[in-house]
Image (cartoon, chains in turn brown, green):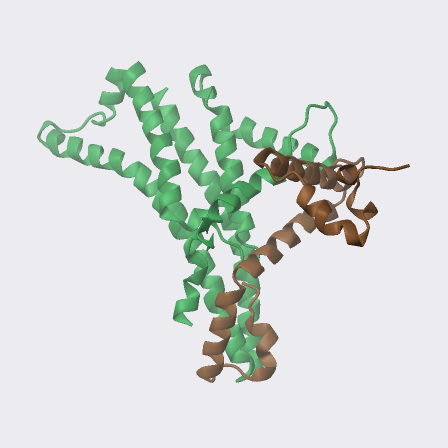
Length: 102
Length: 226
């Protein structure tokens, strides 16, 4: 059965066809909004909208939020790390801790 | 360290794009809506909490004041969730920005006061002069009451900003102190760490209390004016 490339799901696309598959995706604003909506509902219906949802559904979202904020502030954190080294305020084995959890 | 201390209060931008919009909109993701009678656990918990708070807060108002129920409940949910999310590591708290709090306080206060002046003009004007003041004191008292009226939105905004900012700064400082003390004297570092834990518990409470206080005061201004 020959499914056209445009309608294949990601896991069914062969590796050689991958660049053309990516280029064929819908990059209009409504397409992107649709992708976000689908992703949201996939997560929501799998982890939250179930009969006995647990704290994990919410915690995974919060953990992802923390991670994204860390990525956003990585540059400033590593610069302040260099400052800390230069002024002799922290020893090299405390490197991990200086990326403070604050 | 000084520059790093205030770095977390800078408005987040990425490649010139305002990331802060996404951060302000994020709490809305945590409050899903539903059309069912019986919902999943998350929505049921939120609905129970919302009913509890709305009954407690809207019971003092008359019919006209209760039309504000949606506004006040959204307000307390927004401020509460934003403050609590700000306690997560590395996150940005929009309510530390005075601009945002003024943007919330001034329209709400102005709405309440203007409603009062339009519907109960005599009673609103009468608020400027407490009952039973001696005649020579009247001019001065009217001026004082006017000033106290106009300071209400500023006080609302500054109270929220100062409380949340001060809490975040304290956590930064005491966390930094704990780290610095660890190589010098471990016992002192341990004591400082316990202080940090107590402070974090306090901050959780402050986050929720500040939301409550903000909304309660707006509701009181409303009650005076409806």
